[in-house]
Amino acid sequence: MSRSTAAGSTADGTARVASVDVLRGAVMIIMALDHVRDYVSGATFDPTDPEHTTVAYFFTRWITHFCAPTFCFFAGVAAFFASRRRTPHSLSVFLLTRGLWLVFAEFTIVRFAWSFDIGSPIRLLVIWSLGASMIVLAGLVRAPRWLIAAVSGILIAGHNLLDGIAAAPLTGRDGSLLHAPLSAWIWSVLHVPHYPVLYPLIPWVGVMAAGYAFGPVLEGEPAARDRRLVAIGLGVTLGFVALRAWNGYGDPMSWTSPHAALSFLNTTKYPPSLLFLMMTLGPAILSLPVLERVAATRIGQMIAVFGRVPFFYYILHIYLIHTAAVVLALAVTGTRETNVFDLWVVYALWVAVIAALYPVCRWFAGVKARGRAGWLSYL
Image: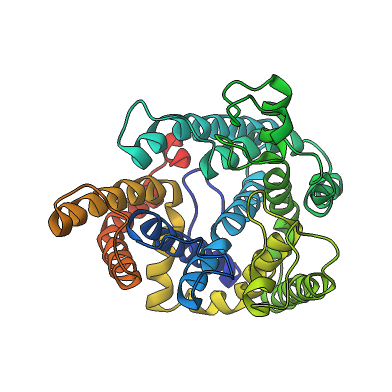
């Protein structure tokens, strides 16, 4: 057995890849920083707006851009490894049912966590996009892998050609989709974010499918595999730099000479542009050979705990952050107004949240590792 698969197996019997668990755990930890900032930061500006932000706020937000693409991509990788131990029919059923479960969770458990209001409006966020992408992948896995790779490449590289088709002119008189025609809803779900659809599907389906097609790269002899990962990761990263420098395609926002460094990195997340995905997935892939070695260390093993229970962690961290933000606001200001604190408070609360979640996630990771019940694979 190669050192990359020595970390055990999932509840549904698929091999774990140690470096992927560490990478996924790292992005889960970073994701919590973004959500703490959402709840408690008193900043009145967009942290990625080069004209108004500070360097500290910019990079506090920018580093969290790696989370959604990395997690979506490696969800596709996990589906590939599941295909090694499942029949095509069994894999399709698993992806379909898990995708439906995630969409249901977005509309219920996650929806309440964000607002603590059972009647809050439904928003189609990251869990929805992961679930819907799994549903699409459930059909795609029946196709040859070369075709899946081609489809994913077209969706990722070509979807910015659709940027000129806006959903806004199709919306209702109030400017939202709430009273808009069906055509506006469909286009917003597919490509143009418009409340309540914040994660359109076309690029995210492409990212998950790309992860599935990428899966075989992680197999084979470790030294050869690492060379492939370095070549691919470095190629995508340098491709981002070259394409962004050209300033001609790949993102609806051009970078400008004032605040050039921040502007260069300020790519579009909603929906994720080609350059946004290259900027995040290139370094993520490039990091895997290093994380392969980190995985054997104590700190690597601790980080990997979060990567082994991502959905469990995701649910808990939103409830904990929201509760902690309200308690902190009541203690300091006497009100439930949470967005009043400086950036140092954001970082302090983030560290406290991760420390509090670690023992719980470690316990549940052990339950999943020891368990054989099929329902554990949905958590």
